[in-house]
Image (cartoon, rainbow over all chains, first blue to last red; front, side, top):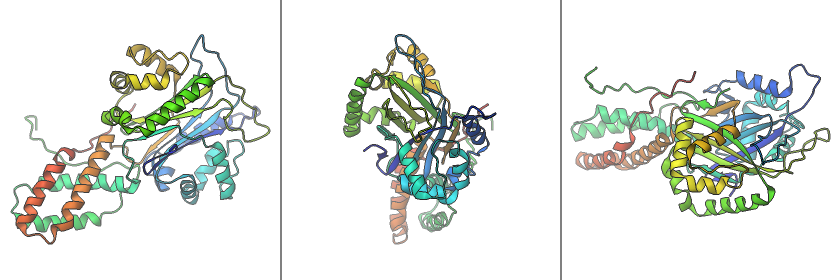
Amino acid sequence: MPNQNGRVFGLTFLCPILDDETLQISHDLQIRNYLATLPTDERSPFALAPGTHVARLVVMDDVIYVGMPAHEEHVKSKYLIFETNTDADLPGYLRALVDVVPQHIDAVWSHCTGYPGTADFDKLLAYMKACQIPTTFFFAAVNDKSLPQTLLALQAKRAVAEFVVEHQGMPSAQLQREFLDFYQSLQSLPYPAPGGKLPRRVIKTGGHNE
Amino acid sequence: MSNINGKLYAMNAITPMKPWKTWLLRAIFFLLDHIKSKQQDLINLSFIQFARWVIIPRNRFPSLSSTQRQESLTYDYLLFFSNFNGTWNQYIDAFSAVLSDGLNLIWRWSEKFPGAVPVTGFKEYIARVQFDTDYYYTAYPEATANDTKAAHIVQGALTTLAAHAATQTPEQFQAAYLQFLLTVQAHLGDTGNAPAVF
């Protein structure tokens, strides 16, 4: 099925950018300038709104001429490409973005032709559907786990590694007690922030330089 | 603007195709999607988190306003978006070495595609048709594809171990814990630091 692989959705949008030769700073450059200021870590709009595994925004200036004997041609508009890998289909995903980070959606897409704004969700959804290009073939390495499941699994992996190291050779009764405490404390850890760095483990390898 | 976020690299490429070839490529993608064994080499390389191909017919570039100039194009276009671990050279080298048949099957319909082997011409072609990313976000920048797969293996084994841990005798738990270790021992490596990007 296009746009979906297992539980993950691969959504692709091609949004024509406004062309106004009277502007000192063109709309495509304004988009680029704004994107350059957006954080890409846990402060990213895609981290604040739920459901985004990986996303990119690309201003496509033109198609590419590959050389003779191919025919050289050019598009008449520049396009904003939005490619995202998410837990939700378009309506659900768009709703999450609009609810949490409408100011960023407006700031970027206000430079696009026909953009209606985030105030009217139905119009916005219709606009995004008009810009959506069906993904012809979509590959996902892990396609059956949601973003929260992935972040929690990465957190658990690190915690388990530390537990295993610290509990080597322990008597079975003590090991069992401490494992139960460990598992309970793992369940109460805060949800890891999407887009953030993972805490570093302190690893001592015992090499001859240490 | 960067093509890199943590350990993930965003590649964008666009190639022109004569419209009559587009339908052949759609059929190939249909088969790839439905014959999962054909994806096994791609799965085994295990350095791509997400990848997609998108065909844009020449008359399907979105037109959203009467004031927008209508496109008048000769070619359909194949867009390729990849999110992979490692460097650009490592990626293209691996593709050329392992997936050349699959790459040729997909890109032979694009104009001037030289083939995935030898790799030098292939890299020159990719460099020509690639364009840069303006904004790139990933929810787990320091985790590679292998890290996420390993994490899910560990999580699954941990849940299984915990399910009966409270009701087992210490000896039973010790035996179950040993089985747990055997399952997860190859999957506990730290994610480590992402490469510094200058």
